[in-house]
Length: 527
Image (cartoon, rainbow, N blue to C red; front, side):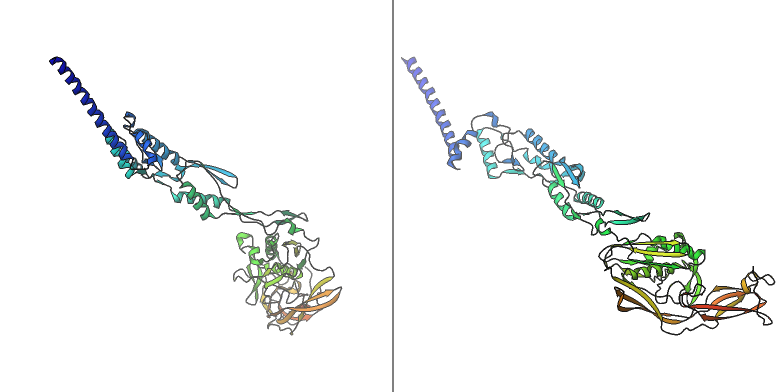
């Protein structure tokens, strides 16, 4: 009986111990359930489920651990590090394609020195996994719920590299709009169509592209097209339907010796082919280019301080005067024009124009028409011609003419000729110069003249407009003669335009008489 009693007591003790364990476990479960019930009732079941007796929760991240808002729940530390590194690498090597006017260029993040600025931030995860028994894991999870961990991965971009790349493309592809232009070939006009301009807002493009690159929330490729603005040319080919005859044309003759003729030829070649668009002001000196030996110009006779002297480019004023007369016949607007200091022989008074390369004195005019003009100029034999081509908008029954009037008497310099003995060119006993003298330069009278523009409708004069008032100074001529003779000279007025006149434009010829030293008229001897 004693053995049996003891046996029952032992069973009772074992049963009581089991009940105690169950009660303790129930109490622990009750504590867990109670703790998780602090939050909303709807979350109790899910959170209680997380704390089952399961070794899968050990060594992995629980709730409230993330990077850039991406949860790491259920991942081991190594898995998390690998995932974050892959995330960063995807952004550092992000593919980009830039489209500039249809031309495509490939880049990636490294092209702009994209870097991960704080990779050490991952070390914060080293002790964030759930470890220990159920209670320890629960306490760590509670701490994380109170202070969540979200790693902020910071990336940087070399802004200067982005801006430099954008500036390089916008500079390369920038184009100014170019008007249509024209050339004259074999008597026909050949029109080249204009070019549409392309421009970019470089700063705005750089800012927009930079914002896309700095958006590291995605690793998707960047496809970026440069916005641009197109500007069509102001004048297309339709503006070059030129009329069959020039708007203005003029020719002058008496080009002079070879150096002077060369200078007129070079200046005419440089003038030829210039296109002046509506509203543009043309500079004659600019069209002539630098008047230097390097550009083909030579020393030729020109005016300086009331004398005819050799000067670089001497003769280009004749091209200028020819241009001026074509300009006024095309009825373009003259901006600046100055007459010569002395009368010229190749155009009527007050209808000349001069330029001076050294001082910058220029002849300029503005195209005040509605269409571009084309300047054609050339030398042919002893003449230079300038034609101004364009679209004729003037009435067919309207014509214009220009006249010149001398308003003061001639004033002559004393002496009329500066004389110099030169037996080399005027040999005694061997007459190789007519009358044993040779004129080097002609005298010039001083006087004032005015030019006028006349407008006719159906041949009837409608108006007369004063164009210029020009004042010309007198200058002595220069000649040489042999030592065995003397010279006397005087000016003579002859019909204006006479071919044998020295100054046909004002009707002046010079009589030069040669006398022996004894005072007798020197006879004429042929060569």
